[in-house]
Length: 192
Image: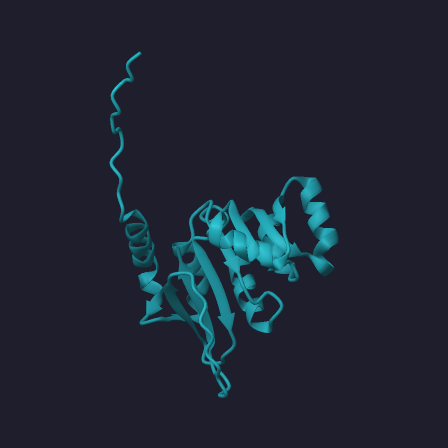
């Protein structure tokens, strides 16, 4: 029996991720001055950057600085940004679950819900929240590198200048010891 010839139906585009990232950064460019986003423009910048179905990591959820980012994300228009898959170590802030109530997020992968566990159960019962998985911290971060690779990873560090630093870069972690206190809000954004 002879095998049918192998035909290629689709052309492989090796730069699709780079082009996708470039297009998204162009959409957010009106809100960025260098690598800074005005604090009052963060909601508009998030609406321009995120699209329905994105996988988003929210870091610093147990810090004051993440309060700023989770509140900003909860203010986006659900008609523009919806059905996000949230990858988050701890569901500790009420705003994390407001994302599901408003339809901004649909699915979550997490490690710990703590004080928000009752509300998680209620949203699950109402059908407003889907659980992808509940993992240990190590498993969750390992899965982010293997199968749950996020499009955007937001990490906020505290400062007080009234601006948010916007840094698109590959997902990687670098430790920089710093003895100086920080003086502005810095949101690092890694794109994959």
